[in-house]
Image 1: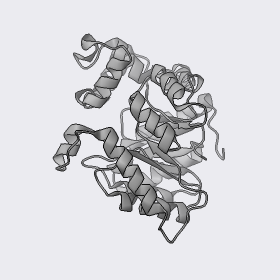
Image 2: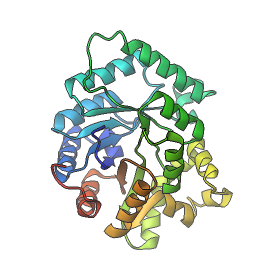
Image 3: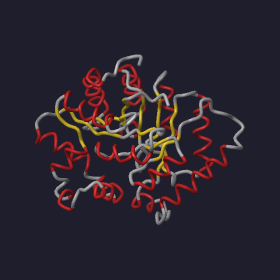
Image 4: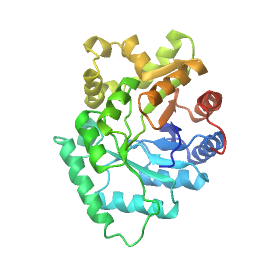
Length: 297
């Protein structure tokens, strides 16, 4: 996968006005980051529509869904959409798919009772559809799963090209690599904020984390890593905040990225905080030299 070692995950790709998104995508590409990642949730652009905007606004950078929600479109639409971008933009599109979260899925009228089984059946259907599509992607579009716990990571190992974990510290990356084995892509997201004042940095981090700490998948995964009830109160303990959001000066943030790479990540997707596009691009420009990110690489 030509995703590079460092990419950018930005929620405002899906929410800001299209001209601003195009400018930001082009500027991030010029900085040398390898992949543009984005999510799909209520209030965002539809994942494949946004991929078209980002691919058309850039020249070489990879665009990756992180993730496209399996409850938003059926397997036929997912497989055909991915194959279409793979054909039109060879080597520049990666498909991350995931089961989302029970509260968000129930809003769409779906049953979240067996997410692992739902994902497995969905992948079966995607593969069946792909065999009959009249157009081809060369190279094939990589498929990653949003995987946190061991059983979903095992599915990512067995049925996909790898995993794209979100809202995880480096210790999760080490466990994920152990489960995935050496031959699957591991591309975790890492929230970052260039702020050295602890109170201000943690205030920004807690504002980012608040919604995620209401979602059972993320809390359950953090419990699996050893975090306790007291870590989830008051917007998150300092211990939890510091594990999820890398804050400080450029060198401190770069060390956190290095910790993920040392733990087995192939790629780290940085999410700059706060989440405005212009501020994010400025932070990414400041971080790039310390991360070894260079234009044209």
